[in-house]
Amino acid sequence: MPPMTLETGWLDGTPVEDTVLRQFVHNQADLGEVIAGAVGGRHSRSPGLAMADAAVPVPYLNQAVLLGPVFSATDDRLDQIDGFIASGTNPAIVLSAWPTPDLTGRGWLLVGHPVFVVRSPAVHQSSAPGDVTIALCTDAAGLAVAERVVIDGYPLPEASAMPGNSILGAATLGGDLRVRVAYVDGAPAAVGSAHVAHGLVNLCLAATLPSARRRGAWASLVWARVDDAPELPAAAFTSDDSRPGFIRMGFLPITRFTLWLRPPA
Image 1 (tube, helix red, strand yellow):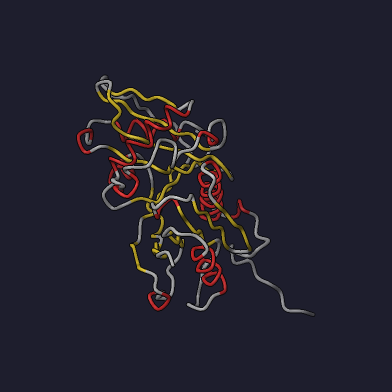
Image 2 (cartoon, helix red, strand yellow):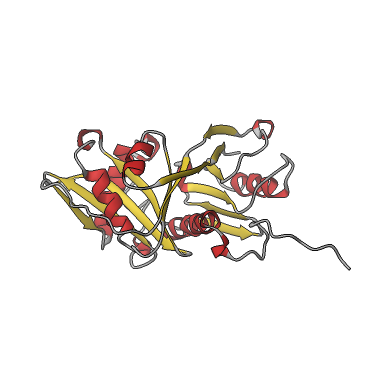
């Protein structure tokens, strides 16, 4: 009798819905393809790996997502990432939901370990402050406004001179990615995006202008995105700065991811 293959949660044939973490990495992989495809970028998928290059000099928008753990610095998937990035001109972020071997020998740079937070479906009570309004982007002009807030709020100086819709292409409209702008006193102040796929709401691509922080815009955008599919869990990977806000809103810290920067060739 051949040896039994025990389920690890990360086999090629494991159902995506096996765990929330597996749902999230597949959601994030699809998100990269959506963003890159909408601006004429590249993307590639192979067993255990998804790669996207949005053709912009912003590493976080050019992302390789590992769909299973890597145990060796010589793993073939890492060679695939090197080859994919080397065929373009932009740096990329490599996202791993697990600790990785030391990859500095490959010329990669360790970025950090953001926290993965999850909120179960639950009734919540929320209302935006009176000076905060939330608008869903429904056309290219609205996406361009959101894009500018992201560039100035993150900030992303490397993208400051790019024309509108270089990051958020109009082809994203009407799909699984929804982008919102929070206005404070009538001025664009914050952005929050949500990608609903694989049974999960992925809270992604968010930024707040410094002048609008602690005005309620960020929290209002979190609730608006949770309500895109209130029957589903919502999740994000987040900085330690935003972690306390998520915890106050009922999100649980689950684990820490690993982010590497793969410089361009």
